[in-house]
Image (cartoon, rainbow, N blue to C red; front, side, top):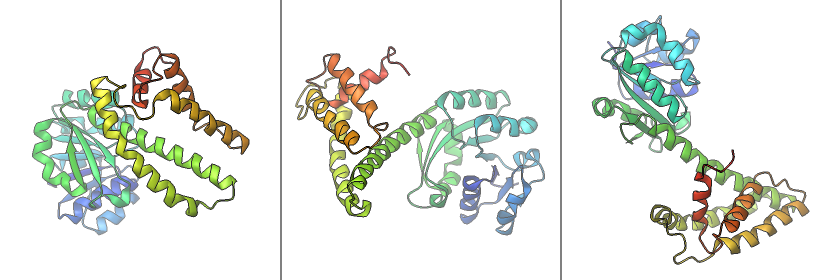
Length: 291
């Protein structure tokens, strides 16, 4: 018996298996392309001849594959070996997919934990890697010590859909930030300003702006978006026109920034001109909002 079985040996799956090995755990690995197991075998991993053998080898199964459908397809031949085991699914997906996978695993008498990896492969096992988990609390508590080999763990709750929800929400914030940075660098670059010259100023500005985010959280939770507003939505919507006009004058695409202007205009039309930007969350959540 191994401590952990890792199913799927892409870049991330390989990093997961290596992290477990580096912590001294006995690890069994399996991949549909056997050649990907060679490096791990040289480091002490046991290479299973089949997925059934891999699942049977350990009480803890860690899967990291391309999509959830692949996880089910791969594990289906080994479903009779699943009872009394725990599946930790670190495949990227949606909350609905995680809940459906939890139900499928439960049919075969296994515990299910879903995970969101907030790291890239080289970070796994390091101090900056964060893994979000949700699903069976009992199973998580039983295996938390082993999972710590991958990075810092944060358990979110019994609902298996919470980990992918947090994952996607965090990525949303990241990509929103990246979109603004890309547009900013396009503007300055068109004026002949090197990115390396502008980036320090941009970075310090973004860091300063983060200071207002806790206030947004309080406003959103309380529903009060109009108290102690420094720069209301109406003022910012008017100023935003200059961003769009300057971009067009410089022949810079507005595809990354125009949606924000449209949302601001909708907020003003809805009577929120004197509210803070945080009030726009309500418009995004409206069932009348189109896709």
